[in-house]
Every structure is written in C-alpha cells, then in structure tokens.
Amino acid sequence: MILKDFSEKKRIVVGVSGASGGIYAYRLVQVLADCGIEVHFVASDAGWQVLDYECGVGREQLTKLVHKVYDVKRIDSAIASGSFPCDAMVIVPCSMKTLGCLAGGIADNLLTRSADVTLKEGRKLILVVRETPVHAIHLENMLKLAHAGARILPACPGFYHKPQTIDDIVDMLVGKICDALGVKTNLFKRWTGEE
Image (cartoon, rainbow, N blue to C red; front, top):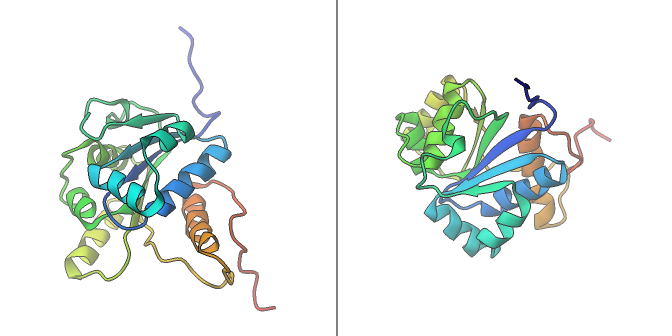
C-alpha cells in the first residue's frame, strides 16, 4: 500500500453565507489560489445571492478559481467528513443565522456540517462574522464558538495602513484572514511602530 503525503499542499475550505461581505470571500479565494492552495468552496443559496449582488460573481467565475465547488444541499460531499484531509475552514462572511446554527450544533446543510466537522476534528475554523451591529445573543454565540475552538474574526478592517481605495480595505481584512490561516501574504502594510 502506498501512503499519500497530504502535507505538501495546503487544503482549505471556504464557505460563504448570506451576509454582506461577499467581496472578502471572492478576494480570499483569489489570494489562496495565487498562493497555490487547494480551495474547496461551498456557499449557501443566500451566499450566492450576496456574491452576485455585491460582486457580480457567480458559479462560473468561482469554479475557475477553486479546486471544487460543492452544492450546499449535498451533505454527502467529501468536505462533510472528518476523514477528508483539510487544514482549515473559513466562513466569510458568516451570517448570524449560520453562527447561530453552529453555536447550537445544528448541521442542516453542507456549509454548517463542514464547519461542525472542522470543530469536531480540532482543525482551524475561522468565522468572519458580518458587519455591525450585534446584540447579546450574537455575542453569546460568538463566545460559545470561541470556547469550542473557533476563531472569531469580525469583518472590521483596520485603518493604520492608511488605505486609499476599497481594494486596500478589503486586502487588509483578507490579509488578516490569511494570517489566521498561516498563509503568508503582503496584502497590506504592517504596523512597525510610529514613524
């Protein structure tokens, strides 16, 4: 029997749910693909709507960038199993509905099931929760998931790098996601102290 070594190439699942911030997902997929990372992609129906509305991006464009696009209704897909070798999963943006399902242990579609499996296996799960405001239940769900091992990364870019364009703002947040994934990028100017 020949053993395959899966350590050579990173494999990351990127999920999109129905909240504002589809531009972060699209840029993240572009960056990960440019870094030679094998990206597996799943979006909820509302996630696809957000990608189309905010970015003009559909399945055809995403399919060209990623290793595989999965149907959110197919819970028998590879990414639904803990035996699928994977380094991490990011849900960007993560809606409060998806956050609530994960906090309640509800894995009712491929997106939430894959994230639940990621937690179960002790792998990195990064949740880029949607924009402000949030109320106490949202905060409690974030805390519950943080205690379970998820990394909460709100869609709140910094401005110390003095962005000049929307792309600069997007790249800053995507750079922070990549930092959390252990993927080295130079997407934004890092703070080195006061000049």
